[in-house]
Length: 100
Image 1 (tube, helix red, strand yellow):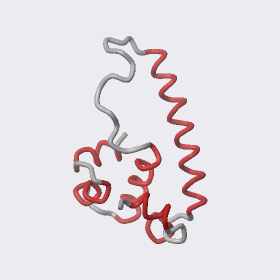
Image 2 (image 1 turned 180 degrees about the horizontal axis):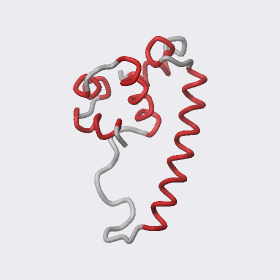
Image 3 (image 1 turned 30 degrees about the vertical axis):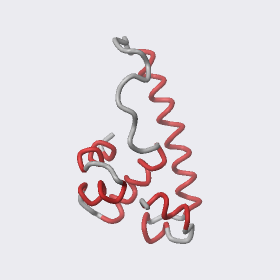
Image 4 (image 1 turned 30 degrees about the horizontal axis):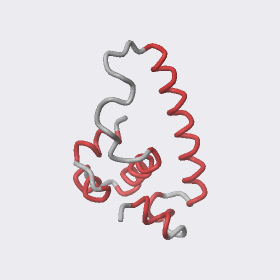
């Protein structure tokens, strides 16, 4: 069970894990996902495609899990190796998600 699944199951726990309430997390995630979609649309307009849209590796985490990973890292000050174990991804993938 990763941190996102945990806070979804135990909605009173996010303050100690992420530093914000469950409602604040959901509001932040919604705004961040909307902003990310806007940025992707802007980038897409300027992209000259070689491959078909959607080609490549599928994402390891959903957008909301990536936001949770970032907040977890900032609150807990863990290594990317620990983040990788917590979210069941490689430490380099955790690093990539954090620095996206």
